[in-house]
Length: 266
Ligand SMILES: Cc1cc2nc3c(=O)[nH]c(=O)nc-3n(C[C@H](O)[C@H](O)[C@H](O)COP(=O)(O)OP(=O)(O)OC[C@H]3O[C@@H](n4cnc5c(N)ncnc54)[C@H](O)[C@@H]3O)c2cc1C
View: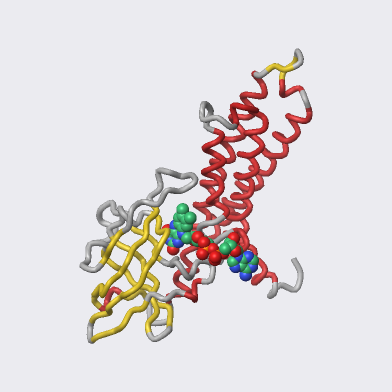
Protein backbone atom coordinates (compact mmCIF):
# COMPACT_ATOMS: atom_id res chain seq x y z
CA UNK A 1 0.00 0.00 0.00
CA UNK A 2 2.87 2.45 0.67
CA UNK A 3 3.85 2.37 -3.00
CA UNK A 4 0.31 2.41 -4.45
CA UNK A 5 0.00 6.19 -4.54
CA UNK A 6 2.54 9.01 -4.84
CA UNK A 7 3.77 9.89 -1.36
CA UNK A 8 6.74 11.70 0.08
CA UNK A 9 8.78 10.13 2.81
CA UNK A 10 11.60 11.53 4.91
CA UNK A 11 14.71 10.02 6.45
CA UNK A 12 14.78 11.19 10.06
CA UNK A 13 18.14 10.27 11.57
CA UNK A 14 20.08 13.48 12.37
CA UNK A 15 19.59 15.12 15.77
CA UNK A 16 21.04 18.19 17.50
CA UNK A 17 23.64 15.95 19.19
CA UNK A 18 24.23 13.42 16.40
CA UNK A 19 25.03 13.99 12.73
CA UNK A 20 28.03 12.17 11.29
CA UNK A 21 28.23 9.99 14.39
CA UNK A 22 24.83 8.34 14.02
CA UNK A 23 25.30 6.06 17.03
CA UNK A 24 25.09 9.12 19.29
CA UNK A 25 21.35 9.58 18.68
CA UNK A 26 19.30 10.05 21.82
CA UNK A 27 15.77 9.50 20.45
CA UNK A 28 14.35 6.48 22.25
CA UNK A 29 11.62 3.95 21.58
CA UNK A 30 10.19 1.97 24.49
CA UNK A 31 8.14 -1.15 23.92
CA UNK A 32 4.82 -1.58 25.75
CA UNK A 33 3.07 -4.78 24.64
CA UNK A 34 2.32 -4.48 20.92
CA UNK A 35 3.37 -0.84 20.70
CA UNK A 36 6.48 1.33 20.80
CA UNK A 37 6.43 4.85 22.24
CA UNK A 38 8.93 7.24 20.62
CA UNK A 39 10.42 10.36 22.21
CA UNK A 40 13.11 12.61 20.77
CA UNK A 41 14.04 15.40 18.37
CA UNK A 42 15.20 15.03 14.76
CA UNK A 43 16.39 18.09 12.87
CA UNK A 44 17.39 19.22 9.40
CA UNK A 45 15.04 16.61 7.97
CA UNK A 46 14.49 17.02 4.23
CA UNK A 47 10.79 16.82 3.25
CA UNK A 48 9.91 16.86 6.96
CA UNK A 49 6.81 19.04 6.43
CA UNK A 50 5.52 17.33 3.31
CA UNK A 51 6.25 13.67 4.00
CA UNK A 52 3.44 11.21 4.67
CA UNK A 53 5.74 8.99 6.70
CA UNK A 54 9.20 8.99 8.22
CA UNK A 55 11.97 6.47 8.61
CA UNK A 56 12.96 7.19 12.22
CA UNK A 57 16.07 5.87 13.90
CA UNK A 58 15.60 5.49 17.66
CA UNK A 59 17.30 3.50 20.39
CA UNK A 60 15.51 0.56 21.98
CA UNK A 61 17.38 -0.39 25.17
CA UNK A 62 20.42 1.38 23.70
CA UNK A 63 20.19 -0.42 20.33
CA UNK A 64 19.61 1.74 17.20
CA UNK A 65 16.38 0.54 15.61
CA UNK A 66 14.47 1.71 12.54
CA UNK A 67 10.75 2.50 12.44
CA UNK A 68 8.23 3.59 9.84
CA UNK A 69 6.25 6.39 11.48
CA UNK A 70 3.15 7.89 9.80
CA UNK A 71 3.58 11.68 9.85
CA UNK A 72 0.06 12.46 11.08
CA UNK A 73 0.23 10.66 14.43
CA UNK A 74 -0.53 12.54 17.67
CA UNK A 75 2.65 13.82 19.35
CA UNK A 76 4.50 14.68 16.12
CA UNK A 77 5.40 18.38 15.99
CA UNK A 78 6.94 19.78 12.80
CA UNK A 79 8.99 22.96 13.03
CA UNK A 80 9.09 25.79 10.48
CA UNK A 81 11.07 25.45 7.25
CA UNK A 82 14.73 26.27 7.92
CA UNK A 83 16.34 29.16 6.05
CA UNK A 84 19.27 27.58 4.20
CA UNK A 85 22.13 28.99 2.13
CA UNK A 86 20.88 27.31 -1.06
CA UNK A 87 18.47 24.71 -2.44
CA UNK A 88 15.60 26.91 -1.28
CA UNK A 89 12.99 24.66 -2.90
CA UNK A 90 13.97 21.92 -0.47
CA UNK A 91 12.01 21.58 2.75
CA UNK A 92 14.26 21.21 5.82
CA UNK A 93 12.57 21.01 9.23
CA UNK A 94 12.88 19.90 12.83
CA UNK A 95 10.53 17.13 13.95
CA UNK A 96 9.76 16.51 17.60
CA UNK A 97 8.32 13.18 18.76
CA UNK A 98 6.43 13.38 22.06
CA UNK A 99 5.05 10.05 23.27
CA UNK A 100 4.32 8.96 19.69
CA UNK A 101 2.71 5.51 19.74
CA UNK A 102 3.20 3.12 16.82
CA UNK A 103 2.32 -0.57 16.39
CA UNK A 104 5.28 -2.90 16.96
CA UNK A 105 4.79 -4.13 13.38
CA UNK A 106 6.07 -0.72 12.14
CA UNK A 107 9.60 -1.65 13.26
CA UNK A 108 11.96 -2.20 10.30
CA UNK A 109 13.95 -5.39 10.79
CA UNK A 110 14.91 -6.44 14.29
CA UNK A 111 15.79 -4.31 17.29
CA UNK A 112 19.43 -3.27 16.81
CA UNK A 113 19.32 -3.53 12.99
CA UNK A 114 18.70 0.20 12.58
CA UNK A 115 22.28 1.41 12.16
CA UNK A 116 22.97 -1.01 9.30
CA UNK A 117 19.63 -0.22 7.65
CA UNK A 118 20.34 3.52 7.91
CA UNK A 119 23.81 3.08 6.39
CA UNK A 120 22.70 0.71 3.61
CA UNK A 121 20.11 3.31 2.59
CA UNK A 122 23.00 5.55 1.51
CA UNK A 123 24.15 2.94 -1.00
CA UNK A 124 20.90 3.67 -2.87
CA UNK A 125 20.70 7.41 -2.30
CA UNK A 126 24.30 8.60 -2.74
CA UNK A 127 24.43 7.89 -6.51
CA UNK A 128 21.32 10.07 -6.86
CA UNK A 129 22.88 12.84 -4.78
CA UNK A 130 26.03 12.62 -6.92
CA UNK A 131 23.87 12.93 -10.06
CA UNK A 132 22.33 16.11 -8.64
CA UNK A 133 25.78 17.55 -7.99
CA UNK A 134 26.81 16.65 -11.54
CA UNK A 135 23.86 18.70 -12.75
CA UNK A 136 25.10 21.73 -10.81
CA UNK A 137 28.59 21.31 -12.30
CA UNK A 138 27.15 20.93 -15.79
CA UNK A 139 25.05 24.09 -15.45
CA UNK A 140 28.04 26.07 -14.18
CA UNK A 141 30.31 24.89 -17.01
CA UNK A 142 27.64 25.63 -19.63
CA UNK A 143 27.14 29.17 -18.34
CA UNK A 144 30.88 29.85 -18.17
CA UNK A 145 31.54 28.39 -21.61
CA UNK A 146 28.76 30.37 -23.23
CA UNK A 147 29.93 33.60 -21.59
CA UNK A 148 33.61 33.02 -22.39
CA UNK A 149 32.78 32.46 -26.07
CA UNK A 150 30.70 35.63 -26.24
CA UNK A 151 32.52 38.12 -24.00
CA UNK A 152 35.29 40.25 -25.53
CA UNK A 153 38.13 41.89 -23.59
CA UNK A 154 41.29 43.49 -24.97
CA UNK A 155 40.05 42.96 -28.55
CA UNK A 156 39.60 39.22 -28.32
CA UNK A 157 37.18 36.68 -26.93
CA UNK A 158 37.68 35.58 -23.32
CA UNK A 159 37.85 31.92 -24.39
CA UNK A 160 40.94 32.65 -26.50
CA UNK A 161 42.94 33.09 -23.27
CA UNK A 162 44.27 29.79 -21.96
CA UNK A 163 43.86 31.19 -18.44
CA UNK A 164 40.13 30.93 -19.15
CA UNK A 165 39.90 27.93 -21.49
CA UNK A 166 42.18 25.51 -19.59
CA UNK A 167 40.11 25.66 -16.36
CA UNK A 168 37.06 24.89 -18.51
CA UNK A 169 38.82 21.90 -20.07
CA UNK A 170 39.80 20.68 -16.61
CA UNK A 171 36.26 21.08 -15.30
CA UNK A 172 34.76 19.17 -18.21
CA UNK A 173 37.26 16.35 -17.61
CA UNK A 174 36.38 16.27 -13.90
CA UNK A 175 32.66 16.32 -14.68
CA UNK A 176 33.06 13.36 -17.02
CA UNK A 177 35.05 11.46 -14.37
CA UNK A 178 32.33 12.28 -11.87
CA UNK A 179 29.62 11.03 -14.21
CA UNK A 180 31.51 7.75 -14.65
CA UNK A 181 31.84 7.30 -10.88
CA UNK A 182 28.15 8.06 -10.47
CA UNK A 183 27.01 5.67 -13.18
CA UNK A 184 29.22 2.90 -11.81
CA UNK A 185 27.82 3.33 -8.28
CA UNK A 186 24.26 3.29 -9.64
CA UNK A 187 24.91 0.30 -11.90
CA UNK A 188 26.37 -1.74 -9.02
CA UNK A 189 23.40 -1.21 -6.71
CA UNK A 190 20.90 -1.73 -9.53
CA UNK A 191 22.57 -5.08 -10.18
CA UNK A 192 22.48 -6.20 -6.57
CA UNK A 193 26.20 -5.70 -5.89
CA UNK A 194 27.91 -3.99 -2.97
CA UNK A 195 28.57 -0.34 -3.86
CA UNK A 196 29.30 1.33 -0.50
CA UNK A 197 32.82 2.39 -1.51
CA UNK A 198 31.84 3.38 -5.04
CA UNK A 199 28.79 5.36 -3.84
CA UNK A 200 31.00 7.21 -1.34
CA UNK A 201 33.58 7.95 -4.06
CA UNK A 202 30.91 9.26 -6.43
CA UNK A 203 29.23 11.38 -3.77
CA UNK A 204 32.30 13.22 -2.48
CA UNK A 205 33.88 13.65 -5.89
CA UNK A 206 30.71 14.96 -7.53
CA UNK A 207 30.15 17.37 -4.64
CA UNK A 208 33.68 18.76 -4.92
CA UNK A 209 33.43 19.09 -8.71
CA UNK A 210 30.12 20.95 -8.38
CA UNK A 211 31.60 23.35 -5.83
CA UNK A 212 34.74 23.93 -7.91
CA UNK A 213 32.78 24.39 -11.13
CA UNK A 214 30.42 26.93 -9.55
CA UNK A 215 33.28 28.96 -8.02
CA UNK A 216 35.33 28.91 -11.25
CA UNK A 217 32.30 29.80 -13.36
CA UNK A 218 31.74 32.84 -11.15
CA UNK A 219 35.33 33.95 -11.78
CA UNK A 220 34.92 33.56 -15.54
CA UNK A 221 31.69 35.57 -15.47
CA UNK A 222 33.28 38.37 -13.44
CA UNK A 223 30.59 40.60 -11.92
CA UNK A 224 27.85 38.53 -13.53
CA UNK A 225 29.10 35.60 -11.46
CA UNK A 226 28.37 37.46 -8.24
CA UNK A 227 25.10 39.27 -8.93
CA UNK A 228 21.78 37.49 -9.28
CA UNK A 229 21.35 38.66 -12.89
CA UNK A 230 22.93 35.32 -13.80
CA UNK A 231 22.30 32.03 -11.93
CA UNK A 232 25.94 31.27 -11.05
CA UNK A 233 25.67 32.77 -7.55
CA UNK A 234 22.73 30.41 -6.97
CA UNK A 235 24.80 27.45 -8.18
CA UNK A 236 27.50 28.32 -5.62
CA UNK A 237 24.87 28.33 -2.86
CA UNK A 238 23.25 25.13 -4.13
CA UNK A 239 26.56 23.27 -4.54
CA UNK A 240 27.76 23.60 -0.94
CA UNK A 241 25.22 21.28 0.64
CA UNK A 242 26.36 18.34 -1.50
CA UNK A 243 29.59 18.39 0.54
CA UNK A 244 27.59 18.16 3.78
CA UNK A 245 24.35 16.15 3.65
CA UNK A 246 23.97 12.41 3.05
CA UNK A 247 27.26 12.09 4.94
CA UNK A 248 29.78 14.93 4.67
CA UNK A 249 32.86 14.57 2.44
CA UNK A 250 35.01 13.45 5.38
CA UNK A 251 32.55 10.66 6.16
CA UNK A 252 32.65 9.42 2.54
CA UNK A 253 36.43 9.17 2.86
CA UNK A 254 36.02 7.20 6.10
CA UNK A 255 33.80 4.72 4.20
CA UNK A 256 36.45 4.38 1.48
CA UNK A 257 39.27 3.94 4.01
CA UNK A 258 37.28 1.24 5.85
CA UNK A 259 37.13 -0.75 2.60
CA UNK A 260 40.80 -0.04 1.83
CA UNK A 261 41.80 -1.50 5.19
CA UNK A 262 40.53 -4.86 3.92
CA UNK A 263 42.36 -4.61 0.57
CA UNK A 264 45.79 -6.16 -0.03
CA UNK A 265 46.38 -3.88 -3.01
CA UNK A 266 44.33 -1.46 -5.07
C1 LIG B 1 19.89 21.11 4.15
C2 LIG B 1 20.11 19.88 4.96
C3 LIG B 1 19.32 18.76 4.74
C4 LIG B 1 19.50 17.61 5.51
N1 LIG B 1 18.65 16.54 5.34
C5 LIG B 1 18.72 15.50 6.22
C6 LIG B 1 17.74 14.45 6.18
O1 LIG B 1 16.83 14.43 5.33
N2 LIG B 1 17.81 13.46 7.11
C7 LIG B 1 18.78 13.43 8.06
O2 LIG B 1 18.78 12.52 8.88
N3 LIG B 1 19.75 14.41 8.11
C8 LIG B 1 19.72 15.44 7.23
N4 LIG B 1 20.66 16.45 7.28
C9 LIG B 1 21.76 16.36 8.24
C10 LIG B 1 23.09 16.05 7.56
O3 LIG B 1 23.09 14.72 7.08
C11 LIG B 1 24.21 16.33 8.58
O4 LIG B 1 24.28 17.74 8.72
C12 LIG B 1 25.53 15.75 8.16
O5 LIG B 1 25.49 14.34 8.19
C13 LIG B 1 26.68 16.21 9.05
O6 LIG B 1 26.35 16.09 10.39
P1 LIG B 1 26.54 17.34 11.37
O7 LIG B 1 25.98 18.54 10.71
O8 LIG B 1 26.01 16.97 12.71
O9 LIG B 1 28.11 17.58 11.45
P2 LIG B 1 29.11 16.90 12.48
O10 LIG B 1 28.88 15.44 12.57
O11 LIG B 1 29.10 17.69 13.74
O12 LIG B 1 30.51 17.14 11.73
C14 LIG B 1 31.02 18.46 11.53
C15 LIG B 1 32.11 18.40 10.47
O13 LIG B 1 33.18 17.57 10.96
C16 LIG B 1 33.43 16.51 10.05
N5 LIG B 1 33.77 15.33 10.83
C17 LIG B 1 32.99 14.70 11.75
N6 LIG B 1 33.65 13.67 12.29
C18 LIG B 1 34.87 13.63 11.69
C19 LIG B 1 36.02 12.79 11.81
N7 LIG B 1 36.04 11.75 12.65
N8 LIG B 1 37.10 13.06 11.04
C20 LIG B 1 37.10 14.11 10.19
N9 LIG B 1 36.05 14.94 10.03
C21 LIG B 1 34.95 14.70 10.77
C22 LIG B 1 32.14 16.32 9.26
O14 LIG B 1 32.39 15.73 8.01
C23 LIG B 1 31.65 17.76 9.15
O15 LIG B 1 32.31 18.39 8.08
C24 LIG B 1 20.52 17.58 6.50
C25 LIG B 1 21.33 18.71 6.70
C26 LIG B 1 21.12 19.84 5.96
C27 LIG B 1 21.99 21.05 6.24
